[in-house]
Length: 273
Image (cartoon, rainbow, N blue to C red):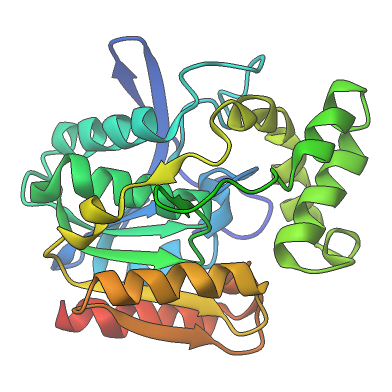
């Protein structure tokens, strides 16, 4: 990864109805790693993972459709989990990764990663889900925690919307303490919440999850809000092959708060996958 303040190499994959933006690094002998970011982020979210993983693997980090640098007006119907999964399958095939990749998804990106593994299991050599927060189809719907953030966005209070969202997923006062590059990235993607709420509480069918046969790693931040742990509990029961790890001294943004531990945990898992 280039030094802070310098953007990584940028690539564009033409798709039938738009472009997919991504960066990549590394030529290692290990199978490629596909990194899938979560809400309000883009491929810049992985700044501490790309160089570490690229030492031994080819690393592919896309910005999901509708995110920076393509964060045009929202809401957009194509900003959807299944659409993202289809885009990423297209990306892997276009890059001639027909043998598949190790899929790593964080937060909403974990739901995209799971959808990709269900849609195209032949492309998924392993699946790492970091603090997934999705609802299972046999569970009742809960209030959308970022509904107030969306209301603030519509009222023009972008900063208040971002603060409400980030502090809810990672802990009180997180937004105020975040570094400048992270704040810039989140501001660049703030309007994606206007699309995300269109499929709020999108459920995962537990039967689809249970059918996965690839190696699975579940990672949680030791200080993450409890709801993320309950998702991993359920996945662990559905997937007997799953390994479970916690990242110390970190909450939801574990790969940024404790990147050494996160990177070591993922690479150790991939070495045996």
